[in-house]
Amino acid sequence: MHLKLDSKLPDVGTTIFTVMSQLANDRGAVNLSQGFPSFDPPEALLDRIAFHLRNGANQYAPMPGVPALREAVVAKTAELHGRSVNVDTEITVCTGATEGLFSTIQAVVRAGDEVVVFDPAYDSYEPAIRLAGGITRHIPLAIHENGFDFRIDWQRLQDAINEKTRLIICNFPHNPTGAILSSDDLDRLASAVAGSNAFILSDEVYEHIVFDGEQHQSLLRHDELWERTFVVSSFGKTFHATGWKVGYCLAPSELTAEFRRVHQFTVFTTITPIQYALAEFLRSDPSFYEQLSAFYQQKRDHFCDLLDGSRFRFKPARSTFFQLLDYSEICDDLDEELAKRWTCDIGVASIPLSVFCETPFTGQRLRFCFAKDDDTLAKAVEKLQQL
Ligand code: PMP
Ligand code: GLN
Image (cartoon, rainbow, N blue to C red; front, side, top):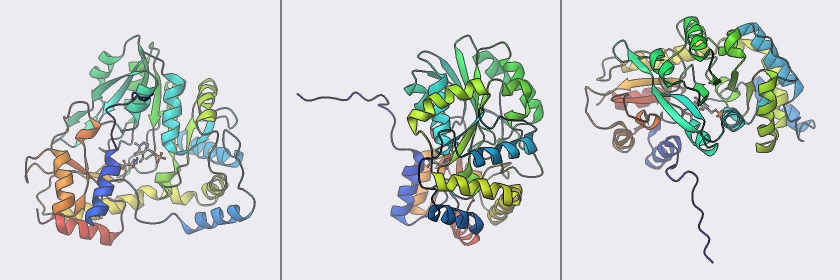
């Protein structure tokens, strides 16, 4: 008998990040596509990991995470956002933000439930929603100010929320646009969900990368929002270590209990020696994450200065390590085709925005990752300046 497996995700292909990085490698292009730093994590943190690897931290960590790491994140959360989180019942260390997002979605979304995402939406949300039997409602972010300022369209959000809405997924600081929320936005979001059955999943992986003196307005800061919110973050972005896949999920105890029901049978736990090392480093070197915004702001400014005089239009990103460039004065090709063509012909790889949208509305823009050493940025911009 020939057994045929009907795909649960028949139209899902390889992610754009893999496709573009692969193409960049094959063609020897400068890879500003997939978001990862070209530099290493801090030496002191690597030393702590080496120490724990050699000193017995090699077996299963507790399912919710190593207590010292949970305590360190809880202390950081209280200090930065004034939210007191219970170390035993309201925080779970997870296997990268991706697992935190996936486990939250599986814990919350049932067949037929609706989930709101804001386009452009990070690519892992929708497949997870579909696997849970949910239906994704895409709401485009509204574009303001010369086409570079992306914001939630409150009216569209209000119109989208109904009795079937089970979850709203937010991602601020926002990949790929760099949009951030203001404290007024938190109030607006709280009003929009008041009286509804909607929980919120807040993907805050770029929590420590916000520019120009602005502050990250975590949903943790808002009492009404906190009651219905799962906040997911990742150490990968904060410590230049995207390959480690260690993150965390903060949520009120009843929500965390449901999260853990899924988490314990998805991965059970995550890498032990790195958890111990992160716990110690978070406490001994808080200046590392405190200075991360300044570090990346300098990279952003350098990248934008190099681009001065080019035919790209842009406004410096407000957060994250991504810069959008509008190429409409160079050509009117579709972004996905162009990103591939320029990887091959010009030798610079980027990420098209349309792949993150149900209906392409973001225009002729590509996303470039500036988490790179100066030589790499200079090499890339030299090529982009020729366009
Ligand atoms: N959410 C967003 C918005 C991201 O950009 C990323 C990764 N780059 C993730 C989640 C996944 O984080 P992790 O690598 O920790 O799984
Ligand atoms: N989040 C990274 C980005 O936006 C990519 C992660 C991945 O490759 N899955 O570039």
